[in-house]
Length: 75
Image (cartoon, rainbow, N blue to C red; front, side):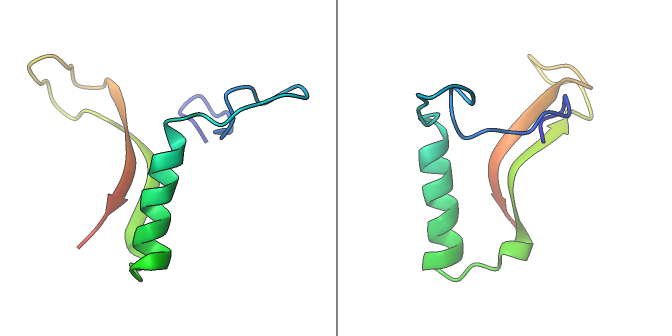
């Protein structure tokens, strides 16, 4: 789910007869699958497309602004 409560979709055009993959998702999915399926990484020690908010002000970002990580793997 996105921060707006909408389902995340893999396709650039989620309705209609013709659609195409969001090109940015393909390498993210491939890297995550390789780590979990190919290298045996424990999927319970990871996250995929996680949304967060900055907890403090940064040089160009302000506390409370949102950001997203594509894949996270925890040690």
